[in-house]
Length: 326
Image (tube, rainbow, N blue to C red; front, side):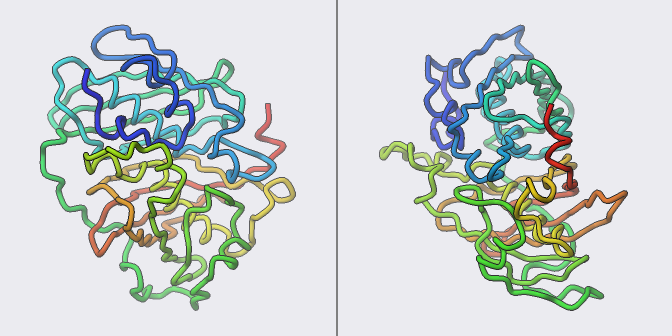
């Protein structure tokens, strides 16, 4: 079996996926197949994972973006027979149903189906006690050209927001940290350029080869795909720009004293060309609507003017920490 470049890169954020080699099908730890169209993957959540250090301090949660990341990587390893090498084109939907924590063991069940537009992988994630997520990923042939993505959510970074409230930006990194609870390796925006509460925000994040996700990349890795930024981190960086907007009226830096900012789900994310070290992510995020206190965001991420990510809807909600345990 020939591994996909994204899997050969060994640049996932999770230790288990870096070190769990027991052969091609051992990349994700314990794996069982039940036919050409599906597989079951098990991922223990080690308490020492880097992704728990900054998400969130005092109340570590395995972020929904990393459930998507794991589902995607499992799908790349466990494609049906005779399917060519694939590229993730869209995250059609994701619903996050219950949080998962250090020490949990996650079980991902994959089901593949081909339709007129390509290949779809439906994934369910669960612990021994709870269903955690339902995810629907759409793939296309990796040999097909990547179609340009249209922008979502209005003006590009730096452009004025029509009819918005007075801007509060730019915000320096310390000012960003005074608003959102992300820290350590999981603080993934460097600066906010424009900030219009109740309307929109633009923020940037510089991708560098010095980030811990590239630490185990083999020196001899020659395939450019080995250096592409993990999609989970790309989405998390976008989410943190949305979190700045979500906390415009009330900062949320201490989740134990205040509330936990939770990702409830996604609808219609599209992925463009891979992001690489040296790229500057420019997020343009708009608050689309608020329903019963739940905020729904849309937007676009660009690199050098090219759209690399569009988000049709990302749902954020605040929940008391005590209500999330058990």
